Image (cartoon, rainbow, N blue to C red; front, side, top):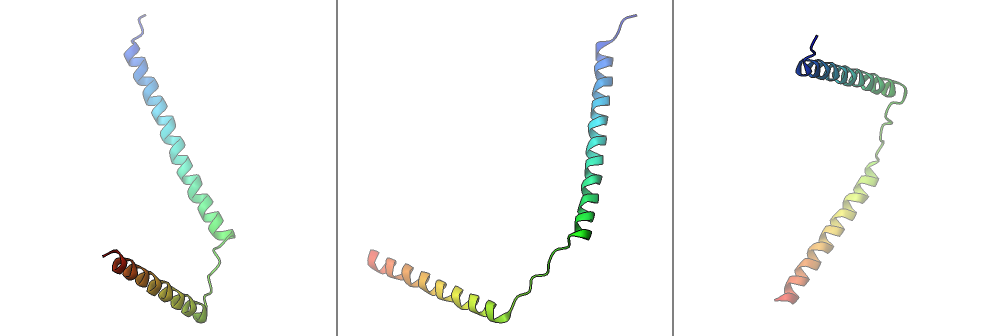
Length: 80
């Protein structure tokens, strides 16, 4: 009885690929279940923003933008 090495290697390849595929499919399902459980028992907290805080940040951003523009303009004026 002679064993075909190519046939045996193909059997092992198919067996190995099947095991890896099943493991990955199981891993995906477990991760989905974990996401549902985390979402159910630990929901994300809602972020409450106030308008005065956002207005102050907008004013601060516009002041930074004006300072950057002034610095670039002064640099270009001194360079030429």
